[in-house]
Length: 145
Image (cartoon, rainbow, N blue to C red; front, side):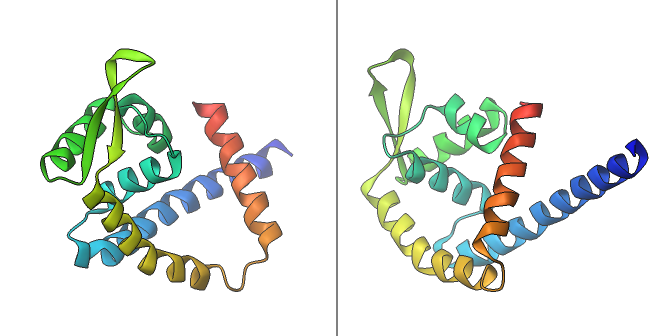
């Protein structure tokens, strides 16, 4: 029993890693006309879905990346006028990262490409399978976090 479960889990790990590579490639194609990289796409998405902004460590947790890597990306994006830093009422040293007005426009333009892509990619997958897959991935993230 353990052998087949181990093999199945390792196959899942390799499949998720392969999917990650494919999603990065898809993200690069989708965001090319907006002069975004997949790294910037992920940061914009994390912030947009947060509603109230996130701190750099918060973005790093959501994306599973190092705080330093996220800090480098956010600094450049602030310089480029896509993001802005704002005082954080809950923490003196960790500012909130928000989409600037330009960043909101970029996100809305990105949604025009991203939403049809997401609908097309999942057209033949029942919603129950997506929900089950999401629960499994979140459970594994929690286990390894």
